[in-house]
Length: 493
Image (tube, rainbow, N blue to C red; front, side, top):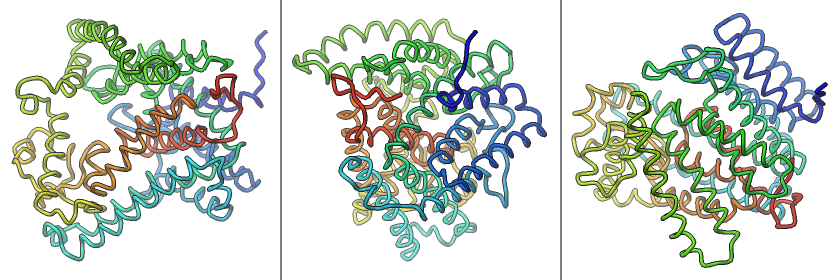
Protein backbone atom coordinates (compact mmCIF):
# COMPACT_ATOMS: atom_id res chain seq x y z
CA UNK A 1 0.00 0.00 0.00
CA UNK A 2 1.29 3.44 -0.97
CA UNK A 3 2.14 5.57 2.05
CA UNK A 4 2.52 9.33 1.82
CA UNK A 5 4.56 11.17 4.43
CA UNK A 6 2.77 14.51 4.45
CA UNK A 7 5.50 16.13 6.52
CA UNK A 8 8.05 15.45 3.76
CA UNK A 9 5.69 16.05 0.84
CA UNK A 10 3.40 18.69 2.35
CA UNK A 11 3.76 21.13 -0.54
CA UNK A 12 3.05 18.48 -3.15
CA UNK A 13 0.01 17.15 -1.27
CA UNK A 14 -1.25 20.69 -0.62
CA UNK A 15 -0.83 21.71 -4.26
CA UNK A 16 -2.65 18.55 -5.44
CA UNK A 17 -5.53 19.18 -3.04
CA UNK A 18 -5.78 22.81 -4.16
CA UNK A 19 -5.83 21.78 -7.81
CA UNK A 20 -8.46 19.11 -7.16
CA UNK A 21 -10.64 21.54 -5.19
CA UNK A 22 -10.55 23.96 -8.14
CA UNK A 23 -11.94 21.26 -10.43
CA UNK A 24 -14.55 19.90 -8.01
CA UNK A 25 -15.71 23.09 -6.28
CA UNK A 26 -14.60 25.93 -8.54
CA UNK A 27 -18.16 26.73 -9.58
CA UNK A 28 -19.57 26.42 -6.08
CA UNK A 29 -19.47 29.85 -4.45
CA UNK A 30 -19.94 28.66 -0.86
CA UNK A 31 -17.33 25.91 -1.15
CA UNK A 32 -14.91 28.48 -2.64
CA UNK A 33 -15.52 30.78 0.32
CA UNK A 34 -14.90 28.03 2.88
CA UNK A 35 -11.69 26.79 1.23
CA UNK A 36 -10.33 30.32 0.78
CA UNK A 37 -11.06 31.22 4.42
CA UNK A 38 -9.23 28.06 5.51
CA UNK A 39 -6.20 29.09 3.42
CA UNK A 40 -6.23 32.60 4.89
CA UNK A 41 -6.48 31.30 8.46
CA UNK A 42 -3.60 28.88 7.91
CA UNK A 43 -1.35 31.63 6.57
CA UNK A 44 -2.14 33.93 9.50
CA UNK A 45 -1.67 31.08 11.98
CA UNK A 46 1.82 30.45 10.61
CA UNK A 47 2.64 34.16 10.90
CA UNK A 48 1.39 34.29 14.49
CA UNK A 49 3.48 31.21 15.33
CA UNK A 50 6.53 33.08 14.03
CA UNK A 51 6.88 30.74 11.03
CA UNK A 52 7.11 33.52 8.47
CA UNK A 53 9.00 31.54 5.83
CA UNK A 54 6.43 28.74 6.05
CA UNK A 55 3.64 31.30 5.68
CA UNK A 56 5.21 32.84 2.57
CA UNK A 57 5.91 29.49 0.91
CA UNK A 58 2.44 28.15 1.70
CA UNK A 59 0.91 31.35 0.33
CA UNK A 60 2.92 30.76 -2.85
CA UNK A 61 1.30 27.32 -3.19
CA UNK A 62 -2.23 28.62 -2.52
CA UNK A 63 -1.91 31.58 -4.88
CA UNK A 64 -0.22 29.60 -7.65
CA UNK A 65 -2.99 26.98 -7.66
CA UNK A 66 -5.80 29.58 -7.78
CA UNK A 67 -7.67 30.58 -10.91
CA UNK A 68 -7.11 34.15 -11.98
CA UNK A 69 -8.63 35.02 -15.34
CA UNK A 70 -12.40 34.88 -15.64
CA UNK A 71 -12.36 34.92 -19.44
CA UNK A 72 -10.49 31.59 -19.34
CA UNK A 73 -12.17 29.77 -16.50
CA UNK A 74 -15.64 31.26 -16.55
CA UNK A 75 -15.32 31.81 -12.82
CA UNK A 76 -12.85 32.73 -10.13
CA UNK A 77 -11.57 30.48 -7.40
CA UNK A 78 -9.11 31.02 -4.56
CA UNK A 79 -7.20 33.93 -3.10
CA UNK A 80 -7.65 36.05 -6.23
CA UNK A 81 -11.42 35.58 -6.16
CA UNK A 82 -12.58 37.78 -3.35
CA UNK A 83 -12.01 41.46 -2.68
CA UNK A 84 -12.04 43.72 0.36
CA UNK A 85 -12.45 47.45 -0.37
CA UNK A 86 -11.86 46.64 -4.03
CA UNK A 87 -8.49 44.97 -3.41
CA UNK A 88 -7.97 41.25 -3.90
CA UNK A 89 -7.55 39.15 -0.75
CA UNK A 90 -4.27 37.88 -2.22
CA UNK A 91 -2.90 41.44 -2.36
CA UNK A 92 -4.02 42.13 1.23
CA UNK A 93 -2.10 39.04 2.32
CA UNK A 94 0.93 40.24 0.37
CA UNK A 95 0.76 43.51 2.33
CA UNK A 96 0.59 41.59 5.62
CA UNK A 97 3.52 39.37 4.64
CA UNK A 98 5.51 42.44 3.65
CA UNK A 99 4.84 44.07 7.03
CA UNK A 100 5.99 40.89 8.80
CA UNK A 101 9.11 40.70 6.62
CA UNK A 102 9.85 44.38 7.25
CA UNK A 103 9.84 43.78 11.00
CA UNK A 104 12.13 40.75 10.64
CA UNK A 105 14.38 41.99 7.82
CA UNK A 106 18.10 41.54 8.33
CA UNK A 107 19.96 43.68 5.80
CA UNK A 108 23.37 42.18 6.59
CA UNK A 109 22.03 38.68 5.96
CA UNK A 110 20.41 39.68 2.69
CA UNK A 111 23.65 41.13 1.32
CA UNK A 112 26.04 38.41 2.50
CA UNK A 113 28.41 36.79 0.03
CA UNK A 114 26.54 33.47 -0.11
CA UNK A 115 23.52 35.31 -1.47
CA UNK A 116 25.15 38.09 -3.47
CA UNK A 117 23.47 37.44 -6.84
CA UNK A 118 19.88 37.56 -5.55
CA UNK A 119 20.82 40.49 -3.30
CA UNK A 120 22.13 42.40 -6.30
CA UNK A 121 19.03 41.51 -8.32
CA UNK A 122 16.77 42.73 -5.51
CA UNK A 123 18.66 46.01 -5.24
CA UNK A 124 18.39 46.55 -9.01
CA UNK A 125 14.63 45.93 -8.99
CA UNK A 126 14.08 48.33 -6.10
CA UNK A 127 16.20 51.04 -7.71
CA UNK A 128 14.51 50.54 -11.07
CA UNK A 129 11.02 50.99 -9.63
CA UNK A 130 12.12 53.90 -7.43
CA UNK A 131 13.44 55.70 -10.53
CA UNK A 132 10.17 54.91 -12.33
CA UNK A 133 8.12 56.53 -9.57
CA UNK A 134 10.39 59.60 -9.42
CA UNK A 135 10.31 60.00 -13.20
CA UNK A 136 6.54 59.64 -13.07
CA UNK A 137 6.31 62.51 -10.58
CA UNK A 138 8.59 64.62 -12.79
CA UNK A 139 6.37 63.77 -15.75
CA UNK A 140 3.43 65.23 -13.82
CA UNK A 141 5.33 68.42 -12.94
CA UNK A 142 6.12 69.16 -16.58
CA UNK A 143 2.73 67.82 -17.76
CA UNK A 144 4.35 65.66 -20.43
CA UNK A 145 2.06 65.08 -23.43
CA UNK A 146 -0.58 67.18 -21.63
CA UNK A 147 -1.64 64.03 -19.83
CA UNK A 148 -2.60 65.59 -16.49
CA UNK A 149 -5.47 67.65 -17.93
CA UNK A 150 -7.44 64.51 -18.79
CA UNK A 151 -10.26 63.35 -16.55
CA UNK A 152 -9.32 60.39 -14.40
CA UNK A 153 -5.57 61.01 -14.60
CA UNK A 154 -4.91 60.96 -10.84
CA UNK A 155 -6.82 57.74 -10.30
CA UNK A 156 -4.95 56.12 -13.19
CA UNK A 157 -1.60 57.37 -11.84
CA UNK A 158 -2.21 55.97 -8.35
CA UNK A 159 -3.30 52.64 -9.86
CA UNK A 160 -0.08 52.46 -11.89
CA UNK A 161 2.04 53.03 -8.77
CA UNK A 162 -0.05 50.41 -6.96
CA UNK A 163 0.62 47.96 -9.80
CA UNK A 164 4.39 48.49 -9.78
CA UNK A 165 4.58 48.12 -6.01
CA UNK A 166 2.28 45.11 -5.57
CA UNK A 167 3.29 43.10 -8.65
CA UNK A 168 7.07 43.56 -8.58
CA UNK A 169 8.61 45.57 -5.73
CA UNK A 170 6.98 43.96 -2.68
CA UNK A 171 7.12 40.38 -4.07
CA UNK A 172 10.84 40.86 -4.80
CA UNK A 173 11.47 42.12 -1.26
CA UNK A 174 9.57 39.20 0.26
CA UNK A 175 11.37 36.63 -1.89
CA UNK A 176 14.67 38.33 -1.09
CA UNK A 177 13.96 37.66 2.56
CA UNK A 178 13.00 34.01 1.95
CA UNK A 179 16.05 33.24 -0.19
CA UNK A 180 18.44 34.82 2.30
CA UNK A 181 17.92 31.72 4.48
CA UNK A 182 18.98 28.23 3.42
CA UNK A 183 15.78 26.93 5.01
CA UNK A 184 13.84 29.36 2.83
CA UNK A 185 15.62 28.27 -0.35
CA UNK A 186 15.00 24.60 0.48
CA UNK A 187 11.29 25.08 1.12
CA UNK A 188 10.73 27.38 -1.84
CA UNK A 189 12.58 24.90 -4.06
CA UNK A 190 10.31 22.06 -2.96
CA UNK A 191 7.17 24.18 -3.25
CA UNK A 192 7.87 25.35 -6.80
CA UNK A 193 8.48 21.79 -8.00
CA UNK A 194 5.27 20.70 -6.25
CA UNK A 195 3.29 23.49 -7.93
CA UNK A 196 4.61 22.66 -11.41
CA UNK A 197 3.85 18.96 -10.98
CA UNK A 198 0.38 19.70 -9.58
CA UNK A 199 -0.68 22.09 -12.36
CA UNK A 200 0.28 19.56 -15.04
CA UNK A 201 -1.83 16.86 -13.40
CA UNK A 202 -4.57 19.43 -12.89
CA UNK A 203 -4.53 19.99 -16.67
CA UNK A 204 -4.73 16.25 -17.28
CA UNK A 205 -7.58 15.62 -14.81
CA UNK A 206 -9.47 18.66 -16.09
CA UNK A 207 -9.52 17.15 -19.58
CA UNK A 208 -10.33 13.64 -18.33
CA UNK A 209 -13.22 14.87 -16.17
CA UNK A 210 -14.49 17.25 -18.83
CA UNK A 211 -14.32 20.21 -16.43
CA UNK A 212 -12.83 22.83 -18.71
CA UNK A 213 -12.67 26.54 -19.38
CA UNK A 214 -12.91 28.29 -22.72
CA UNK A 215 -10.71 30.48 -24.92
CA UNK A 216 -12.03 31.70 -28.29
CA UNK A 217 -14.82 29.13 -27.96
CA UNK A 218 -12.31 26.30 -27.61
CA UNK A 219 -12.24 24.06 -24.51
CA UNK A 220 -9.06 24.47 -22.44
CA UNK A 221 -8.03 22.87 -19.14
CA UNK A 222 -9.41 24.60 -16.05
CA UNK A 223 -6.05 25.36 -14.48
CA UNK A 224 -3.96 28.07 -12.89
CA UNK A 225 -2.11 30.50 -15.17
CA UNK A 226 1.13 29.07 -13.71
CA UNK A 227 0.57 26.05 -15.99
CA UNK A 228 2.52 27.78 -18.75
CA UNK A 229 5.73 27.06 -16.77
CA UNK A 230 5.00 23.34 -16.23
CA UNK A 231 6.99 22.11 -19.25
CA UNK A 232 10.17 23.56 -17.72
CA UNK A 233 10.28 20.46 -15.50
CA UNK A 234 11.99 18.84 -18.51
CA UNK A 235 15.12 20.82 -17.61
CA UNK A 236 15.62 18.76 -14.44
CA UNK A 237 16.68 15.83 -16.63
CA UNK A 238 19.93 17.72 -17.29
CA UNK A 239 20.78 17.81 -13.57
CA UNK A 240 22.24 14.33 -13.39
CA UNK A 241 22.23 13.72 -9.66
CA UNK A 242 18.77 15.05 -9.02
CA UNK A 243 16.86 12.12 -7.45
CA UNK A 244 13.64 12.85 -9.39
CA UNK A 245 15.14 13.98 -12.68
CA UNK A 246 13.52 11.29 -14.87
CA UNK A 247 10.08 11.50 -13.29
CA UNK A 248 10.05 15.29 -13.41
CA UNK A 249 11.15 15.24 -17.06
CA UNK A 250 8.37 12.80 -18.02
CA UNK A 251 5.78 14.95 -16.24
CA UNK A 252 7.24 18.02 -17.97
CA UNK A 253 6.85 16.37 -21.39
CA UNK A 254 3.21 15.59 -20.58
CA UNK A 255 2.71 19.24 -19.65
CA UNK A 256 4.40 20.35 -22.88
CA UNK A 257 2.08 18.22 -25.00
CA UNK A 258 -1.08 19.38 -23.20
CA UNK A 259 -0.02 23.03 -23.26
CA UNK A 260 0.81 22.83 -26.96
CA UNK A 261 -2.58 21.45 -27.86
CA UNK A 262 -4.54 23.66 -25.49
CA UNK A 263 -2.48 26.84 -25.41
CA UNK A 264 -4.26 29.91 -24.03
CA UNK A 265 -2.36 32.43 -26.12
CA UNK A 266 0.28 32.88 -28.80
CA UNK A 267 2.73 34.07 -26.15
CA UNK A 268 2.50 30.68 -24.48
CA UNK A 269 3.75 29.01 -27.65
CA UNK A 270 6.84 31.19 -27.54
CA UNK A 271 7.36 30.15 -23.90
CA UNK A 272 6.86 26.49 -24.87
CA UNK A 273 9.38 26.65 -27.69
CA UNK A 274 11.87 28.31 -25.37
CA UNK A 275 12.25 24.99 -23.50
CA UNK A 276 14.44 23.44 -26.27
CA UNK A 277 16.43 26.68 -26.29
CA UNK A 278 17.17 26.40 -22.55
CA UNK A 279 18.11 22.75 -22.98
CA UNK A 280 20.58 23.86 -25.65
CA UNK A 281 21.98 26.64 -23.44
CA UNK A 282 22.60 24.28 -20.51
CA UNK A 283 24.09 21.59 -22.75
CA UNK A 284 26.43 23.97 -24.55
CA UNK A 285 27.78 25.47 -21.35
CA UNK A 286 28.71 22.03 -20.03
CA UNK A 287 30.68 20.97 -23.11
CA UNK A 288 34.28 21.89 -23.78
CA UNK A 289 34.09 21.91 -27.59
CA UNK A 290 33.75 25.14 -29.48
CA UNK A 291 30.37 26.64 -28.60
CA UNK A 292 29.83 28.26 -31.99
CA UNK A 293 30.35 25.01 -33.87
CA UNK A 294 28.14 23.15 -31.43
CA UNK A 295 25.40 25.78 -31.74
CA UNK A 296 25.54 25.70 -35.52
CA UNK A 297 25.27 21.90 -35.61
CA UNK A 298 22.41 21.92 -33.12
CA UNK A 299 20.47 24.54 -35.07
CA UNK A 300 20.92 22.62 -38.32
CA UNK A 301 19.62 19.45 -36.65
CA UNK A 302 16.77 20.95 -34.64
CA UNK A 303 15.41 23.61 -37.01
CA UNK A 304 14.03 21.24 -39.72
CA UNK A 305 12.28 19.14 -37.09
CA UNK A 306 10.65 22.20 -35.51
CA UNK A 307 9.60 23.60 -38.89
CA UNK A 308 7.94 20.32 -39.90
CA UNK A 309 6.31 19.99 -36.47
CA UNK A 310 4.92 23.54 -36.51
CA UNK A 311 3.74 23.19 -40.12
CA UNK A 312 1.91 19.96 -39.26
CA UNK A 313 0.34 21.53 -36.18
CA UNK A 314 -0.87 24.54 -38.17
CA UNK A 315 -2.32 22.38 -40.94
CA UNK A 316 -3.89 19.70 -38.72
CA UNK A 317 -4.74 21.56 -35.50
CA UNK A 318 -8.06 23.12 -34.57
CA UNK A 319 -8.87 26.70 -35.50
CA UNK A 320 -7.65 28.21 -32.20
CA UNK A 321 -4.36 26.30 -32.30
CA UNK A 322 -3.69 27.30 -35.89
CA UNK A 323 -4.48 30.94 -35.21
CA UNK A 324 -2.27 31.20 -32.11
CA UNK A 325 0.59 29.29 -33.71
CA UNK A 326 0.44 31.48 -36.80
CA UNK A 327 0.66 34.54 -34.53
CA UNK A 328 3.69 33.19 -32.70
CA UNK A 329 5.47 32.05 -35.87
CA UNK A 330 4.73 35.26 -37.80
CA UNK A 331 6.07 37.36 -34.92
CA UNK A 332 9.39 35.51 -35.03
CA UNK A 333 9.66 35.40 -38.85
CA UNK A 334 11.30 38.81 -39.27
CA UNK A 335 12.76 37.85 -42.65
CA UNK A 336 9.30 37.88 -44.27
CA UNK A 337 8.53 40.64 -46.78
CA UNK A 338 6.48 43.44 -45.20
CA UNK A 339 6.88 41.66 -41.84
CA UNK A 340 5.56 44.53 -39.79
CA UNK A 341 2.48 45.23 -41.94
CA UNK A 342 1.43 41.58 -42.15
CA UNK A 343 1.70 40.77 -38.45
CA UNK A 344 -1.47 39.60 -36.66
CA UNK A 345 -3.19 42.29 -34.59
CA UNK A 346 -1.77 41.25 -31.21
CA UNK A 347 1.84 41.06 -32.40
CA UNK A 348 1.48 44.23 -34.48
CA UNK A 349 0.50 46.24 -31.39
CA UNK A 350 3.74 45.19 -29.66
CA UNK A 351 5.87 46.28 -32.61
CA UNK A 352 3.99 49.56 -33.08
CA UNK A 353 4.40 50.34 -29.38
CA UNK A 354 8.17 49.91 -29.56
CA UNK A 355 8.28 52.10 -32.69
CA UNK A 356 6.28 54.82 -30.96
CA UNK A 357 8.51 54.64 -27.87
CA UNK A 358 11.56 55.08 -30.12
CA UNK A 359 9.98 58.10 -31.85
CA UNK A 360 8.98 59.55 -28.47
CA UNK A 361 12.60 59.44 -27.30
CA UNK A 362 13.85 60.87 -30.59
CA UNK A 363 11.56 63.84 -30.01
CA UNK A 364 12.41 64.05 -26.29
CA UNK A 365 15.91 62.63 -25.80
CA UNK A 366 16.12 64.03 -22.26
CA UNK A 367 13.69 61.27 -21.17
CA UNK A 368 15.59 58.44 -22.81
CA UNK A 369 18.15 57.61 -20.10
CA UNK A 370 15.88 57.12 -17.08
CA UNK A 371 12.59 56.78 -18.94
CA UNK A 372 9.26 58.53 -18.58
CA UNK A 373 8.40 56.77 -15.33
CA UNK A 374 5.17 55.38 -13.97
CA UNK A 375 2.38 56.18 -16.44
CA UNK A 376 4.80 57.70 -18.91
CA UNK A 377 2.94 58.04 -22.21
CA UNK A 378 3.44 57.78 -25.94
CA UNK A 379 1.44 59.29 -28.77
CA UNK A 380 -0.10 57.41 -31.66
CA UNK A 381 2.59 58.46 -34.11
CA UNK A 382 1.69 56.00 -36.88
CA UNK A 383 -2.08 56.17 -36.47
CA UNK A 384 -2.21 52.40 -36.07
CA UNK A 385 -3.73 52.49 -32.58
CA UNK A 386 -6.63 54.72 -33.59
CA UNK A 387 -7.32 52.79 -36.78
CA UNK A 388 -7.46 49.53 -34.80
CA UNK A 389 -9.67 50.74 -31.95
CA UNK A 390 -12.77 49.26 -33.57
CA UNK A 391 -11.19 45.78 -33.40
CA UNK A 392 -9.60 45.77 -29.94
CA UNK A 393 -11.50 48.35 -27.86
CA UNK A 394 -10.55 48.32 -24.18
CA UNK A 395 -8.84 44.93 -24.49
CA UNK A 396 -5.66 46.71 -25.60
CA UNK A 397 -5.86 49.99 -23.67
CA UNK A 398 -8.09 51.52 -21.02
CA UNK A 399 -10.94 53.88 -21.80
CA UNK A 400 -8.87 56.66 -20.22
CA UNK A 401 -6.07 56.10 -22.75
CA UNK A 402 -8.40 56.05 -25.74
CA UNK A 403 -10.11 59.26 -24.60
CA UNK A 404 -6.79 61.01 -23.95
CA UNK A 405 -5.17 59.57 -27.10
CA UNK A 406 -2.09 58.96 -24.94
CA UNK A 407 -0.99 55.41 -24.16
CA UNK A 408 0.91 53.98 -21.20
CA UNK A 409 -0.39 50.38 -20.89
CA UNK A 410 2.16 48.98 -23.34
CA UNK A 411 2.64 45.24 -23.70
CA UNK A 412 5.61 42.95 -23.03
CA UNK A 413 8.48 43.65 -20.68
CA UNK A 414 10.83 45.31 -23.16
CA UNK A 415 8.23 47.94 -24.07
CA UNK A 416 7.23 48.48 -20.44
CA UNK A 417 10.80 48.89 -19.22
CA UNK A 418 11.79 51.05 -22.19
CA UNK A 419 8.89 53.42 -21.54
CA UNK A 420 9.07 53.55 -17.75
CA UNK A 421 12.85 53.27 -17.29
CA UNK A 422 14.38 54.10 -20.67
CA UNK A 423 17.90 52.92 -21.46
CA UNK A 424 18.40 52.05 -17.80
CA UNK A 425 15.46 49.65 -17.92
CA UNK A 426 16.63 47.96 -21.11
CA UNK A 427 20.13 47.64 -19.65
CA UNK A 428 18.67 45.96 -16.56
CA UNK A 429 16.70 43.58 -18.78
CA UNK A 430 19.72 42.73 -20.96
CA UNK A 431 22.11 42.33 -18.03
CA UNK A 432 19.72 40.09 -16.08
CA UNK A 433 19.09 37.89 -19.12
CA UNK A 434 22.83 37.46 -19.69
CA UNK A 435 23.36 36.62 -16.03
CA UNK A 436 20.52 34.11 -16.27
CA UNK A 437 21.93 32.45 -19.38
CA UNK A 438 25.24 31.99 -17.59
CA UNK A 439 23.72 30.78 -14.34
CA UNK A 440 21.04 28.40 -15.58
CA UNK A 441 23.43 25.43 -15.27
CA UNK A 442 23.27 25.94 -11.51
CA UNK A 443 19.49 26.21 -11.20
CA UNK A 444 16.70 25.36 -13.67
CA UNK A 445 14.44 27.90 -11.94
CA UNK A 446 16.42 30.68 -13.58
CA UNK A 447 14.92 29.69 -16.94
CA UNK A 448 11.40 30.22 -15.61
CA UNK A 449 12.37 33.49 -13.94
CA UNK A 450 14.00 34.84 -17.09
CA UNK A 451 10.96 33.94 -19.22
CA UNK A 452 8.79 35.82 -16.73
CA UNK A 453 11.15 38.79 -16.94
CA UNK A 454 11.10 38.81 -20.74
CA UNK A 455 7.32 38.53 -21.18
CA UNK A 456 5.38 39.30 -18.00
CA UNK A 457 6.87 42.27 -16.11
CA UNK A 458 4.04 43.92 -14.14
CA UNK A 459 1.47 41.47 -15.47
CA UNK A 460 -0.90 39.40 -13.28
CA UNK A 461 -0.59 38.91 -9.52
CA UNK A 462 -0.18 35.13 -9.79
CA UNK A 463 2.25 35.01 -12.71
CA UNK A 464 4.36 37.84 -11.28
CA UNK A 465 4.55 36.31 -7.77
CA UNK A 466 5.54 32.90 -9.15
CA UNK A 467 7.95 34.33 -11.73
CA UNK A 468 9.73 36.52 -9.17
CA UNK A 469 9.92 33.56 -6.76
CA UNK A 470 11.67 31.50 -9.46
CA UNK A 471 13.97 34.36 -10.47
CA UNK A 472 15.05 35.19 -6.92
CA UNK A 473 15.45 31.52 -5.99
CA UNK A 474 17.44 30.78 -9.12
CA UNK A 475 19.80 33.71 -8.58
CA UNK A 476 20.26 32.78 -4.93
CA UNK A 477 21.23 29.26 -6.01
CA UNK A 478 23.97 30.58 -8.30
CA UNK A 479 26.11 31.57 -5.34
CA UNK A 480 24.17 30.25 -2.35
CA UNK A 481 25.55 27.68 0.08
CA UNK A 482 23.53 24.84 -1.48
CA UNK A 483 24.24 21.15 -1.71
CA UNK A 484 25.66 20.22 -5.10
CA UNK A 485 26.52 17.09 -6.99
CA UNK A 486 29.95 16.10 -8.31
CA UNK A 487 29.52 18.34 -11.37
CA UNK A 488 28.67 21.37 -9.26
CA UNK A 489 24.99 21.13 -10.17
CA UNK A 490 22.21 21.81 -7.74
CA UNK A 491 20.29 18.73 -6.62
CA UNK A 492 18.45 19.93 -3.55
CA UNK A 493 15.03 18.28 -3.06
